[in-house]
Image 1 (cartoon, rainbow, N blue to C red):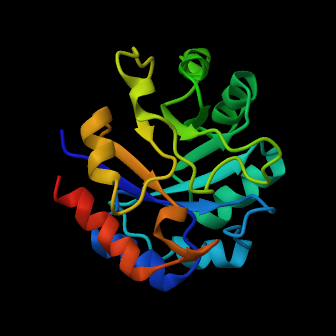
Image 2: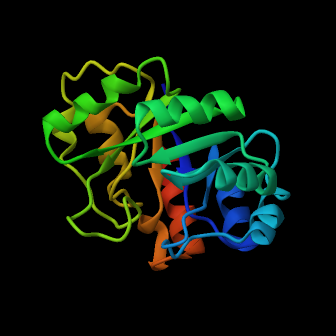
Image 3: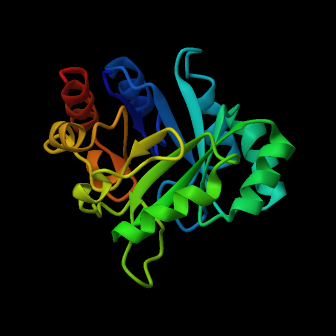
Length: 212
């Protein structure tokens, strides 16, 4: 099955258009104030209006409250909610409240970390395996950290899944070959500086995925 790509943390019309033109299946809009990719409601609405129907809009959150979710869904016309640092119980409540698909990020450093995915069975629609960031890091993702893909060898995935964490135009083909991922997610790997997406890197990443 060919892989598709999500370009996460988009914040300008130009980079969003590049992701869409390059064939991204999903675009990620971040709603987390400490992130350099955080969007205002106005900018989220501007970007969402440019996304064609065949591309899904993913809102990215870190243990959000109901007010944030509601405002973001309205501004970004979101199709999917990607939740970091969110318990199964809270994720279930958000899914029930919004009626939207929920992706849950599972932070991975060791094989045992994968077991967290099991607790979201019946709650999440997809698991996003991301690299666990260093202790004390300001962000739960988007820092260019990658985990050992061999940890996924033989793991019985309880849910559909995607691969994230430290991917870039140069290693994404290797990552897909090593893991069998059918959806890959990139943020800092296509940036020239934190929060600043690079048009050339977006294009290169998507070409690498399309060539698989």
